[in-house]
Image (cartoon, rainbow, N blue to C red; front, side):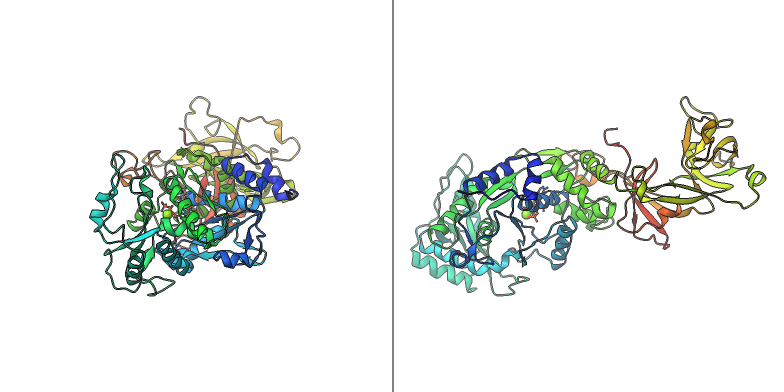
Length: 597
Ligand code: ATP
Ligand code: MG
């Protein structure tokens, strides 16, 4: 068997840490497990694919969201995994909307999901073909497959009550009991199933069950339900159907029709794998689906500390107003992370670092932030911002330079990328500095402003503090200092005066006022909702703090999607305009990990 030469992307993949999924795929490629398969150009049954051409995709994976909410960071892991594996191994990843449940889907979510997959850096077009599919397009085939199972003696219509069915299923210690309907004739089953389809029966009156083994130690094999009656309109098929396939029946068929090779899902589906294989083996025997059929592989879902990753809980946070919508920057939704200032590259890096495993675990939020910092550090333009401003007055400025004089200063856009140029700002008589940069009486180790001490205003001049003014409540309202002449950064002799403190500032003359949103963890415990308390009681009441800051002109010019590093403070990104129309920033993350503290 010949193996294709490694493509550049294939070589790149070799540098990535291996994992059990990569090993499975590499083994399948080596053994040519799927090498003989045909592809009919679109999803379809065995006959459709057999008249096609050799499948141009070496492997096919899929990301199959149910369009019933916004995607979260766990889905990002799954997207990066499925699209990433297809990219690395010469394959194609399908985006498939799993819309077989008539009651839950909403069109709004479909667009949202397409959007974030693109934003994350992936797409479903390959060789001029769009691989965007919806499971409800396969209802006709699913129905045909169900009739086939009945005809082959592998399925029957059960009319026990749901309660009887539950009792007769047994449990871990008790085998199940056969339904009295289990021995119906094929003809009777077919007639009854068609009556179900034709709307002759009410919801819950009957179900179609696979006929497998009521004594199986795996309860999922005790004649699982594959079709149920539901008189409900479907967003795609309207009122055509009043019976709908169960997820566990629909999903393997969707994979098979789409020529999926590696069907990757989370661990809770491990017990379903025997049914996945049973069903596809039966349909392959009947010549209904292409072979070899897809295989299911399970990995541990992502649990991230200090947030919740369940659509239901996220919806509750939104619906009950605990957060400001699905894209609230504190939310672990992809739209929330995006608005917060996360980049697609940082989420891809995160997904790569956490890898995939077979064991459930909690990933520390600091790993997500670490990936973000590593991505932003080389990219983010630097700027100065004062988040808790107090005025500093240079009392000898007018004597030295004349009233109203402004001294042009500059600093590199990025300290390690001189080619990115310089940013310009003015130094004048009045400046904004951080309130915490002044102390009347310095504690040990404090090298910033206190009477008699000299510090450098970064990229500006050295000053000597002379005093400060407080109001009746003792609140600091102004700090005073004198400029030390001939100390301007970058001029000859500027370093003649040695100082221990170096502080950031923004001048009153050209600083721009901005609303800055400082976020903290959304929940105050690492594993919300896993203990005695309801997860809502574990929300962090201090997860959002809004301050009025001043930023240098270059920062005020930043646009949506730009990443900035405010020196000393962390990474920030512009957000939607404030209520008063002013500019706003979100703090993406601090400069250092503070989660452990
Ligand atoms: P939720 O439980 O939050 O509603 P879900 O599994 O019902 O999520 P789907 O839309 O069915 O949401 O998920 C689409 C894909 O994303 C599935 O293949 C699922 O395995 C995967 N996925 C969902 N949550 C996670 C997670 N926390 N970590 C990794 N993959 C996930
Ligand atoms: Mg699901």
